[in-house]
Length: 105
Image (cartoon, rainbow, N blue to C red; front, side, top):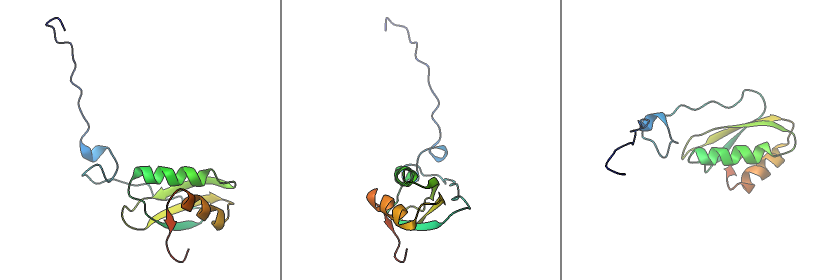
């Protein structure tokens, strides 16, 4: 660029301050599911994208006011649903998104 340097160096956030659990090495805090409404146990979620996929799918169900997932990567995550939607319609939304309820739910 004509011999002049006009670039500004940008500071990058430390990995522990950003990214999902599968992309960063630091501890990540999660928001627990909402206290009201039924809570379901889910399997197959591994990162923040999985959480968003499930929350969006369940939020589109008639009767759902909110859907919040507490991620346990590689383990049993929890889905809290506020509203009047039935467990069967919530299950259909979760399985339609590619994830599954734990046995017994």
